[in-house]
Length: 453
Image (cartoon, rainbow, N blue to C red; front, side, top):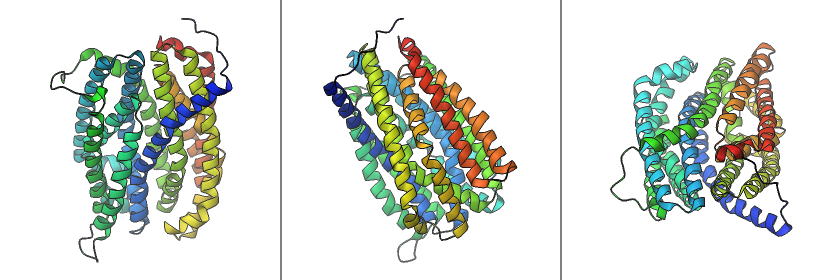
């Protein structure tokens, strides 16, 4: 298929596109921020228990990222398919797709919950968790991941809403459950007046409670829209829709799983550098989450707007939304990276007073500032290509980057050459740089539009 020549936007058109992007992106950034605060608040309170507990939460979250990769891939497929149908004006079809995505998310969530309950300890050992970390990590892992159905349903319900063009409701839900999470975390971890303190178990229970509440609130929000006006019929598996999910979501899951499995490998290398080095890596990761939040928010807006534009056969508009989102992302993420590094000396003492750990965090974040432009391109153009149905190419680039550059780079620079955490974060930057170049070349080729039909 031939694509029409790209027409340049006028100033007014460009301004309107920026407004449309920010109208969707800002609530999505807010949602991602509040979702990320679950782990951030856990790390903050758990850090008061000790660095062993921080490492236990960190190794658990590394495994959960693999779970999230599957749930997010299903969410990507759902968002793209529903956005396409909304763009075409076919609401009944969008509603049917929403039902199928919810059914599939429920079954997958149950499966991961059973796997967690039975194999928690072997999985953590495979991750390289030291004996001192293993016992608290098993407690936390089983607590937060056995009810994985709530995680999967929150992902998919939010994705359905975003596909319909509503990024505000997921943000509002995330706000309320995170305010509750802060309160529950403090009460369940430390108790009241010293009584009823549950420590790491309390942190896990607080997370599960807010995820259950989040599922209920997102369901209520969805049923207020035509896409979510569900009847009692139509809740049987539709093989054709499932095949479409697998076609779109399979490569997206492969892309994220490739990333997460690579992370499992190099996280194990970092664990073997020492518990304190791993704790420093986790703390640095918690600070960089602010850049990721902005990137994922803009990627969400780009996926929705590009998907709806392609559904309406407006290819020029889809490309312009993609370019504008990426341009905004590069400047925004770089600014956030600089701000985090500048503010670090005032914030890090609230998490740890260990000088060696603080110095390692400072080095990691200093390197990360130079990684933000590439990170923005990777996050946003991945969403753009997936909106066009081109889910295989991001999977290929991620597989090459994570294994040829990041995992191997962590070993070469961090372990073999002895650069420690600095080597780890340089390897991360090389990976993102390579993938940014490959994704940009794919975007310029317009082949992702041809795939969308």
